[in-house]
Length: 160
Length: 311
Image 1: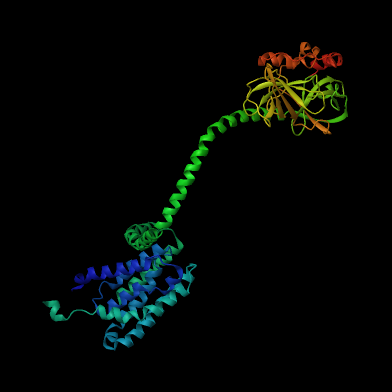
Image 2: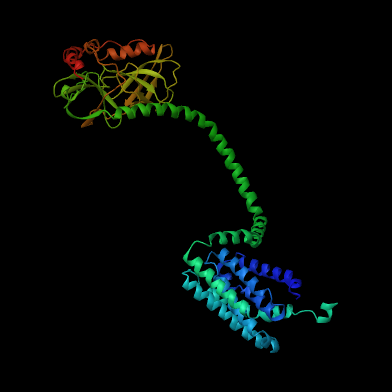
């Protein structure tokens, strides 16, 4: 159980992702902004200790809901479903080449965007649905970079 | 996987509860309180952007500052005049407020006949004692004071115009507040202000408004505008010629005003000739009396006495 060792890094990354999400930008630029939170959490799930990813996703989802002013739990569901799928296929995804896992990640981003659109419609939020879909284009190229950056140190160094 | 499912179910439960009820509002507000540092951090780049914008705009700001300084100086100069205007405004307001009160009691009268005799400048109006008209009542038109009632009959009344040589009206120079008497010149057009001290502060184009000195006219109504000033060196008094503001002999309809401040028309008053009122005012103002009237006094005496009791 080394999850507590990685906790500060996970919290820091999540907070940075939240700030990047909350950063006020002009509306046209907003659509180009990657889904930072899902990007960080999925890359983390693939390469790092997964014990705290889901609670972290839940907490940051609540923060997003509260700050965006939508129904609480909306972003939680949208974040938890792709992450659960990621956890389910984690061993498989770690085995296949990075470009293939990137395609799977793209599908997970689509799930996220689809869930956001669906839940926005169901809860009666008036949101621009394209604002959920366009960021996928800019999230997917970043995903392998994040995975490479989050590559754990070799075990020899960890034990040292 | 079970944890994931449990969390998803929990999230959906939160979603449904928050959608249906207000029970999660405390949770929302505490999340917002916890997220405030994040929001604060996220706001900072926007502020930085504004700071750089400010630096870039500094030259413009300096220009704007200089312009404001110039405007400030100009306004300071104007403020110095404001105090004088304020005093005038207070006086005008006082005049206006008394006007307002009086406007509540007014009666429209039709001009039945107008006499063009230079020494008998009168109007006959279609209102009389039946309507509460009283002797000495002020008559105005849309622009200013026209004259006063000198004879009251049952259905009609006779008004003496301010341009009649027998008529005198206490006036006030609106610009300075100087009180004086304006008497008719008898030419049907102009008024004369014969009792001005040689050093009186009066200018051409000054507006003369009615004064309540003498207690007959309501104060504050425009009477005339100074046309010219005549002052022979060595004379005791300066004379001013003024043109009436009211359109004398051009009005089909006039307004009769009730002056609540006026002394009730007593028999004493009623039996005197109309020009005695200016005489009284003159004494109030400390100026010599105008020449006594010679005509129209008989009629006024006979008809005015019963009218004085009627209101």
